[in-house]
Image (cartoon, rainbow, N blue to C red; front, side, top):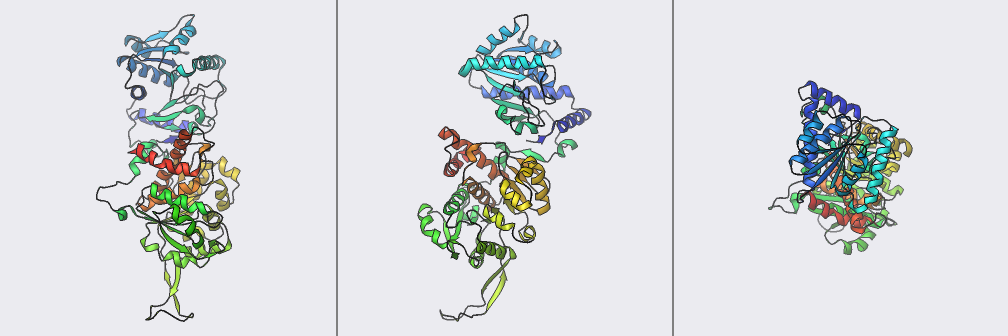
Length: 538
């Protein structure tokens, strides 16, 4: 789904109109698309009723077209007009069997209609409104809210038409009278205010419908920012042919962990397997092996030299010997920030691995055997957590990474990498993510509410999830594991990051739903919900 500002959407519609797709045609397509969504929601039910709050603008028009289509499908439909004259769309609605709620006792009639309605279409105000609301409209929305609250579990499903009435679709500000939606059906593209707080709390489920825009429309093609959704993510996932073997799905090599952060390696490794990788090899400080191996029998292991349980500066030699078999490499979860681990990372990025010059007969060789250097080419790379903090200490680090490496910082780590304050980053998340993806030449996954994935070519994808279920230690390790697991299967860097971040966010929501609360969700709960998310994508 494209993500646009209000002015961008207006420009797109204006160009479409000039190209032959008239505003009336777009309204017909939007209204029919809205009706189709509602029909799908109630596909197995009979004797259904819908009520529409119909404003004077295009949203009201979309609502009338949808209500007319519902009438034609056998629904009982009523329209409550808000500052809208009885125009041609109203006439067509009544001719299809719809009823306009009017008269001095109109609101009482609306209240009665809501008591038996299955769906309420909120089409009062559109995307171009500015706050505060005018008193007449504010009072109406407030009174409707009171009615819906009184109905409790018997209230109709609220479907917002393009946006909930009272939301500023650029800033995300919300009038206090706004009716919270269960579902927002947005037309053609998601307006950026809908995926900002506090507006997002009023949106409910978010779905975009096609209004017939030509795919080659220049103003539409110019929009490179998108919102991830189930269908687009499902299309990214690799096929799993029946004749596959473990090599088909790649090897994820994960260097992670330290004595203080033992679980990070386990969470990342299991997530890589859950993402579908054929083999996961964990490279950990040697003392961690005994603790982890019994919990993770599916993994293979590389035991790294260590100093007091942290990766030693000599460990790059050991890890580099495994590069040839690795389809993708994850560095960083649970590393800690010891100086020895920084040297290890620096040596890896330098691309050189020292080893003994040649094999000789016998088993014992002098300690001063000559050593040579060979180039150790890094596999496709993901860097997370403490790996990012250590990376920031290495001069010209961005140029030393493989092209289009994936960096997964939260705002604090992004602050370390950029020198910006966390406040500056959070106030300008899209701008910051894009700027540094382009400057560094790598894919940036800026984590947090509405995680962003930015590519050097200007593409940007937003994950439409903001949930405290993911505000828990270890969930970032799960995300990094998902991404490297997908990267190992051959997805390109950007697609791996988008699909991994979307699956991760959905798994957090699934875990919270299973537990009945966001407060109790652990990283392992998110991990265990990944199969359910993937199952629903098939």
